[in-house]
Image 1: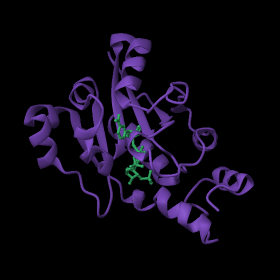
Image 2: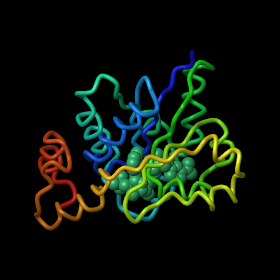
Image 3: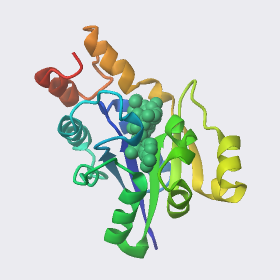
Image 4: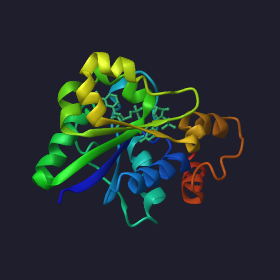
Length: 202
Ligand code: NAP
């Protein structure tokens, strides 16, 4: 039987409890053996915006997932130079795992709505499943995806997961730190301590 592996792709600037709850919900609902968090080194769509150093985002991700034996972190995108194209990541992982692995790429619905702008998007959608975490004010635009990629590919490879937990957002957390407001319980205690110790977002 094929091994089902979740790939939690994101900037994780910073990783928060919404990401963790989503990954665990997907793991359970889709019967995944494990979920690998993949911090993007250089997010392709964020060439203009200032993002915390990749090393800090990696460490925060590692300490956040440490308590869950089904979770892991991959440095695959941090070890590659240039923009973090998901299709390159998938190719590398397919080579490493062979034919017996089936991949589920988990990310926010807003990111998946823009899938047609991703590098080699059609091929990417053919070689892995996408799980779109939706939250209030950000629905998955299925009509758009069907127009762009065709009805049958979208219905077999794009799945929606409503995640009210994702009312928590990295943008809000960065803003809270800057304004001196509490981020307790929005991130794990270890990530909170790391943010303050390293002076991130202030
Ligand atoms: P983003 O624009 O920062 O995030 C879009 C939305 O999705 C935000 O609301 C974000 O919330 C949420 N989100 C991000 N990662 C999530 C996750 N794993 N689970 C649930 N929600 C998530 O998106 P991004 O981080 O730049 O990109 C997301 C992933 O798509 C990355 O792995 C990136 O490499 C990939 N991507 C690839 C290409 C390409 O190959 N050309 C292009 C674009 C994106 P928070 O801010 O709270 O996380």
